[in-house]
Amino acid sequence: MSQTWWRGAAIYQVYLRSFADGNGDGVGDLAGLRARLPYLKDLGIDAIWLNPWYPSPMADGGYDVADYRGIEPVFGTLGEAERFIQEAHDLDVKVIIDVVPNHSSTESAWFKEALANPAARDRFWFADEPLNDWQSIFGGPAWTQVPDGQWYLHLFAPEQPDLNWTNPEVHREFEDVLRFWFDRGADGFRIDSAALLIKSDTAYEDLDAVHDVYRRWREVADEYGERVLIGEVWLPDQERFALYLRPDELHTAFNFDFLSCAWDPADLRRSIDLTLATHTPIGAPPTWVLSNHDVTRPVTRYGRADTSFAHGGALHGTPSDPELGHRRARAAALLAMALPGSLYVYQGEELGLPEVEDLPDELRQDPMYARSGGANPGRDGCRIPLPWSGEEPPFGFGDGTPWLPQPESWRKLTAEAQRTDLGSMLNLYRKGLELRRRLLGDGTLAWLPLGEEVLAFTRDSGLTCVTNLGQDPIPLPAGTVVLASGPIEDGLLPSDTTAWLT
Ligand code: TEU
Image (cartoon, rainbow, N blue to C red; front, top):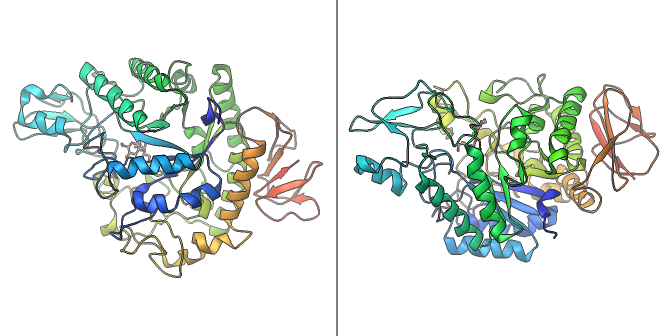
């Protein structure tokens, strides 16, 4: 692949705990992932992004990192991680790993040292009393007291103490961590909570000095060549967002504006135009994201009356029409795949998994649930272990009892059941990704005026994508349909359906 492989890549997000379990302990691991690499290759993806795989007490699913240079024993060993990277590369699949620079873990060597020795607290934010009234993003206060009376800052769970990025040692440490993994073959990093690193007395989001961090990181990445830095930057202000994508900073960032859109032609079109207007002038590739490990599964979301994504679980449990949600998720998948730039597919999207909304409360693991006093159900419902095969749980996930229970109804959604069903979500993704590889990816688009309720555009390769978000079937433009998310009759594209034509 070229110097800039990420510009048009289809990147598959592996939430390792829930992907595949190789050793029968009920938790996904590297052995399970390595065994399923052929599945991912066959799906047609270019790269894998893994959520944090580091040693962690798992207070936040691994986003509480105890050691940035190791592998969580439940997942495997460093040697296995190196073999996994090699095996992926042998299949021409790139590997992106997660780095968590905003906060560490109370089990990290640095934090333990800080607890034991008040003179060693400058890598975190310690103070004699809370310096402000910030609330943790997971609920509850953002300051926690230690036994000797001081307080430390944690924007997320108390087990995730924030690092002090005014301390040069923190900068050096992370530059070294990047090198550690680049040296082991990692093709890039997804940067967690990338806009939150710098704090003032009154603010923590998107402070200017954060860009100094990423300019340095870009220098490190450039030393290696062909490595990508991807920001998790949730910022409504697109001008501020674009600053992270300047030529000497991050290569790309997730498109949360698109992810959050309602299934609505005006909102989607606004978001696509805004995305292109933001990225094109600075030469950064847009990204297209429909879901991830933090948000509601699309088939559930798109079947609700309110189809936008809402933080805080605001729409959790509201009625959802599964048939409608499924149809729209198929149409959305082909729309996202046809847009110019890179694409993210969160594991299970290709199986059309719904959000599991009826988990018994006592099984919920996400700290959001407990810290919100139960007001927010948390994100476990999109993190259920994948169904691979068979007629009943654990559906081939592994020999043990999965760490979160799978619904019985998932027998129809296993990868095995979908492989032989030509009309399945899995086969839609396979065909879509295969055509995308040949005809889509990076480039530009030209809108076609087919009406306010229709999103239609042509790509540089000549492929045309038409999505009908209106109620009534619409005539398709001239051309041959090469793929569609639903049946097309008499040249008419039904409601909530996408077609690709050449
Ligand atoms: O998420 C960053 C973040 O701000 C989240 O709180 C996000 O707004 C929320 O999950 C949406 O529901 C990242 C990771 O993706 C997330 O899994 C971690 O919990 C969080 O950072 C802390 O590391």
